[in-house]
Image (cartoon, rainbow, N blue to C red):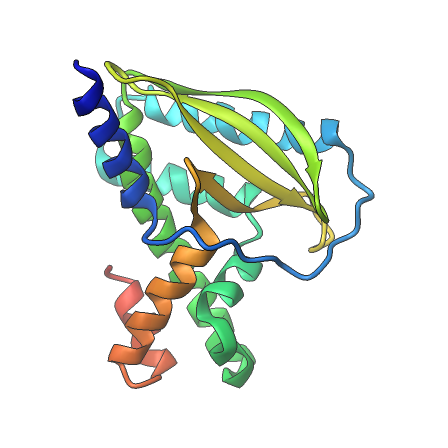
Length: 203
């Protein structure tokens, strides 16, 4: 595979995850965790992702596995709240609970479809470092027939548990892009969170 084709494939892969790359910051979490703790969390998550990639399961079964991994290792409520943006403050507790559950399935299928492109490849955790108010765990994605590329995981214990709250794919920021995309989807539904929640279940 020539370099130009490889670069285009990698850019398409990153674009499949997200539409923008403007960084967003969560409220400052505590730093009781260590670099080793953060790296260990992502080592476990990546190990389960690699196992799913290599499992040979059907697409539907793989999506179920990816959702369980996401629920286990990601701060889903924080990501969902950030994705919904200012409108999250206007939602009732019941609405936020329903939206968060639907969003978990939606984002697991979305990112699961991208991770399925790793079949024949893998993700390798290489390093971790403190970054502002959280830790960044650095990993490398190895796709069959393509040059390796960068994935970074942002980890904190703000929720009371050690979880990741963001992924950066070659500079493409999940939190920023999901906020933009969910915001646009909500605007199309004239701010109706219940309608958005219903549609996310089948998206």
